[in-house]
Image (cartoon, rainbow over all chains, first blue to last red; front, side):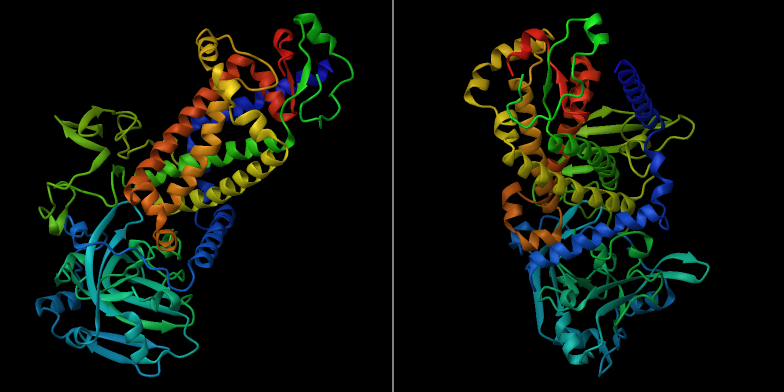
Length: 263
Length: 308
């Protein structure tokens, strides 16, 4: 028995020493385990599937994000990410006040579209005062005006094989060996057809400013800000986003963020 | 010395070990911790370690806390093209950790309700003097050590599920085996003993029976029944998806930014609890305490064992 207690003590001492070393060494002990292509990282990421599934099961088909009174707008919408795209075609469109801008709707649709801002504004509009939640943690309430994405999809007549809407953007986030990495995002058809999901061209009663995504950005009110692509060049209906850019369905998703940005 | 739960397994040894009787008067071995308490205890420990460290990583992405439904940036937030477009009148900042220029160099600053404190070395600026890191919490406190919000979220949400599952297992087991009402929730008799118990603790005279004293009960009940569920709910309130699903979350906590503030206060509470918990374990005899949390068996002091 005495021997057993001694070995137990030794065990405890070793555990204690290990914990102390870990504390001294800091949390960088786990850095390598969390590399994007490590097995541990892939395993931990599986919890996101659980989060996604659980949230959607609780949500039902169209959970409405809170809409606030006008008095809740206290400041201009904080811009984040790209705030001033530098590509030549964007600069030219901006100089022209987006008069020649066309939103292309392509991919798995019966009737591909090319819509001018005037045509988008002529469609029935929706105005909503909602809270923008950034993945970083801050929130900002603003009024957004645009056309429901579902109306655009209906006009283009989505093919049954389509599962996702991909937003291709004008803003290059960085230069890679393959050329500029443009921002892009994707949402499934449930999110795309949600009544609060709009292609916004107005912010707080004014035309959408460049810093906030002019001429067109998407609002997906059940998800975080990085889902709501700005500077939209085209909308593509696809059955899978696996072949686009890094294959994870978005610029930030390709860099380790969850595709489902509801949490 | 039978256990109140009536389900004590056989003692680890038929007779009192000679070695211990020789060194000091031995109290009776008491079966103190059920297997449910012991297993969930170590899962909490692991899960909370990763929750806290990945939580600080997430906090570092925007190390400013606000009160209310949105972030009142005041006039300070706008950089770049919209500089100067802020609303100086709208500032609901509670805590703001950042680095600032002072003289020739930089310092780490922690501002609480506008009162600034120099926290260089820990908050805002940390690491070696010749290669400092400018982030709110230092590298040794976050997972990963370098700034990586996406990875921090992966770790945080994985262990959040572990924590939620463990809490439910613990709750059901503690209701079924009586642990919750017998050992955790303080009753009127416990509360009457509160003043005496506070004095005993101040004199470091710690009771060592089978049952917890009232300060223990209060702190365990607070952490397990208030703080952990509160952390789960304030965590959910930060999710725009959950706010659409359960709008009452926003009412309950007074808005997403207040929920984030409370979530951070919960983190501080958990860290404070951890520090006190470890200190008390060391004061009360770490070997005995660890044995009871690993094997279930605890050696009470002769004079107090009868309290069980």
